[in-house]
Image (cartoon, rainbow, N blue to C red; front, side, top):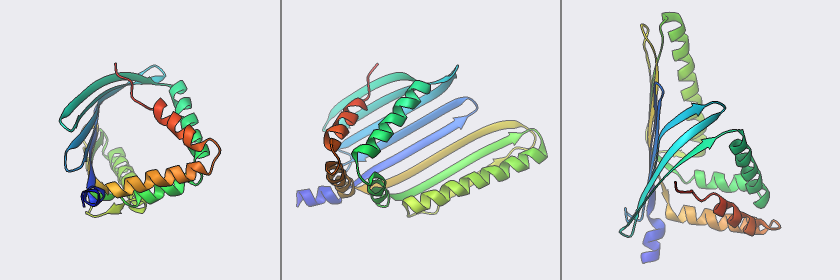
Length: 217
């Protein structure tokens, strides 16, 4: 009965992303097993430095009463982008039909809340109106793709606020989603099955996961 209760329990995802002026902020909270396991990832800022982007991240968690915390600073440049491309290529190579496995898991995600507010202003009424229309177009396109990937269980709230007499830009996204523990476990099993069909697939995945472990500062 306990295993069944765990399998039917939800993994809760709560995210907040914003950009106001030059200030960027991203936060992701993950709750598992009715709050027994908690994880938080915070990226308080991203800064452009020459040809790279500097990211500052903070991680914290609570697992069975044990608190964990770490922070890290890293730069994303052309070399980092190349490594990401190579890892993605390896994932596809190590797993047969990886896209189908991922799509199945995404279909199990239940989106409970999606609020996205954007404020735009160019200082000119005509160009502000055009920019506002473009922002609406981008938002509806993103929402259309999202609705094809996950299950929307609440009406998304989209808003674009034009400022005709000022130059400004800010955007803020808040979302809440849930997925069954059983769905994540099923994806892991499917990954192992599909990876096992490729030569070196299983060992390749474990090597990738090891390389992707965060490094503390």
